[in-house]
Image 1 (cartoon, rainbow, N blue to C red):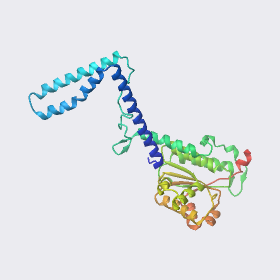
Image 2 (cartoon, rainbow, N blue to C red):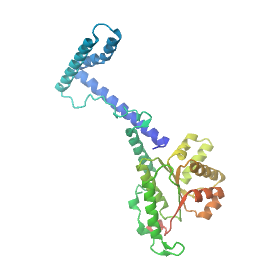
Image 3 (tube, rainbow, N blue to C red):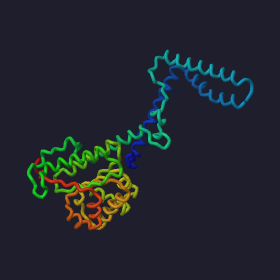
Image 4 (cartoon, rainbow, N blue to C red):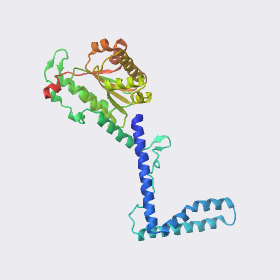
Length: 324
């Protein structure tokens, strides 16, 4: 599973820091053990010379290699036994001189061959959750916290159903979408008036998809276009936009609340069109209806949003006003 550069770099930095911490701890413990029992230092020096002596033995081709090898092995075993006796006698804690890497599978590199090791993958998952927690609106964005009781149980003639039933279907769909998410899943457009739970439900999707180990970027439309503008006017490096293009799920909240300029239209077209062509999933929430989308952004963008995305309609009364 791919992660954004931001998340991956933070995870790698944490793994590097953990490697350095463990090495520093080992060297500190070793220095303390040598000070306590100086003979340990002599033994370790002799053991480190074993490999050099073995290489020399194999290269010389003199005498009886088997006998020399057996002698070398016996010396090594005797030194190991003496070393362990000293450690036991000094009553040092178990693992005090443990020099194993932070991960025995990858040796602390984060990769087994070309494949990401589980240790680095777990750090990526943690960094992904931490990043989302800082961006999501309330921290309560869980499907179990989505209250259907806030939606009216009255019949909508144009809908042929109640708003509550519609939202129950939306909730079920979004839960399944998030739980089953795979890269390339169909993009979604949440459409409906303000205060109907679009932001909350999109945040629920973000959290679940991230917890399943996928790369998610959650951003408001205003922040997204501000970042594009910063790159255009060279206030930021173009690399800063890479996560928006490469993440497995991009969530853009509140499209239509930004000041819509020709530059914004061009940036939106680039994001929508590029991600559709590259089969990268996007979730966009907006207060605009279908006619508003075309009027504000033009036919090309509206066509891609309404034709390439699955539209999820939200109905009901403004929940924010009800709670207030």
